[in-house]
Image (cartoon, rainbow, N blue to C red; front, side, top):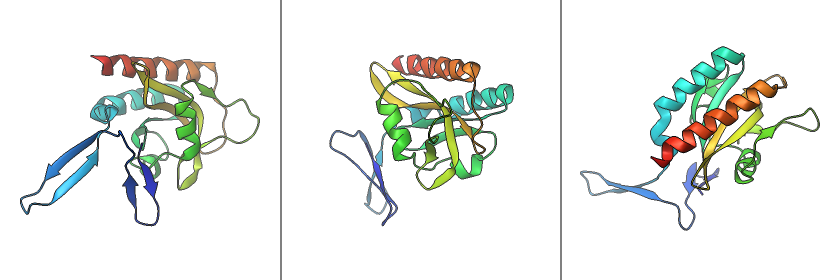
Length: 164
């Protein structure tokens, strides 16, 4: 999994990470980390828009490295930004996170603690974590069971869609 190298603003690629390789007309070689769920950005954006309108929460979808779709408050601050270490850890646990009021909500992005995840449901495809569906708040607002079930449903749908 790629980690953001803050000193150079580049992603670090780990052993086994899939890469896309491009060449320029000048003969330069460009390596881009491949994101399976990244191909669903438009689809994910439509889901986020629907979720945000129906719940009054900001909705977001991430791949394992960055936020790929957002609807609601904070879109400019979240879209395309690397996910936080806490959110990455939640994804690897492969279970739904629903903040219950104790402790602190995990920040969505590495460099912005203002937007936190009230709900995070992992997108799983054939046992692999591809990303997460989030309900995001910038005011510490608690999400209910409805938001939790919606995030789970959308995450399951995206995961099944990736199997085909």
